[in-house]
Length: 289
Image 1 (cartoon, helix red, strand yellow):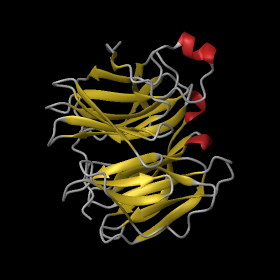
Image 2 (cartoon, one colour):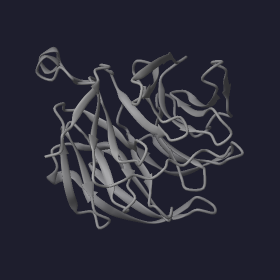
Image 3 (cartoon, helix red, strand yellow):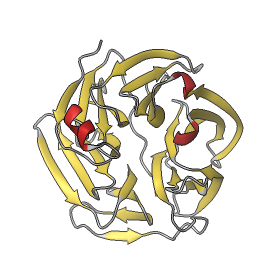
Image 4 (cartoon, rainbow, N blue to C red):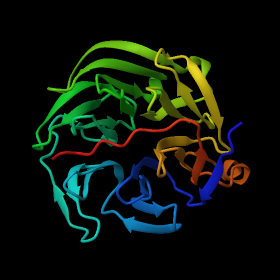
């Protein structure tokens, strides 16, 4: 069993979207329900916390500097030092009552982001955000967009709607961000939890954080379970590889939906965890807009 360590007892309500910035040798992630943005340098243990103007649901690093932010109400460019927010054109297909959720850049620097529908009516969509700020709808019928990630060569896109308990994969046209040939990657009926955030490692295996499952699972490219990393908290939300050699797996968790009794039982819920692995990750793609 891997030696999972709590490195920050940050008590996130809904820690999510963690990314490693190799240029700064630091981690960034969001507490969606806390409207907080975190920056942490493992080497110096320096932690900075930034209050966001609203819920920050996911984000991407920009090649030109700064961030592309997926706030609950829409997309914006953000400068961390000045706090200046430049809102992008609204996504017209977004349905009132939904918000943006999970997002990640493809290998060509577009941002793929989806909606969260708290009423679980399948009113959410997935979108491709082009580098010029334009966008297109990829598909709909989502309650909770999750698990957005891409194969090492960028030709396959993985996606899930958490409540359906499945991760799918598509053939992905990197030139136009068109998707086709939807297939089932893994059905979670044999798993204790539901699929939340996912990433791909350097060997093309998919790592998934399991909400309400107390674990991270590594899946082989054929969708079979390769290994399991157990965590001491139930709601495991997102993950990334970091460190100089991208050899450390960092994992966010959440206190969201847990009762007082649950929080007494799982005192480190909402914390940031880390575990050294024998496989390496891939450098995170940046938004080219």
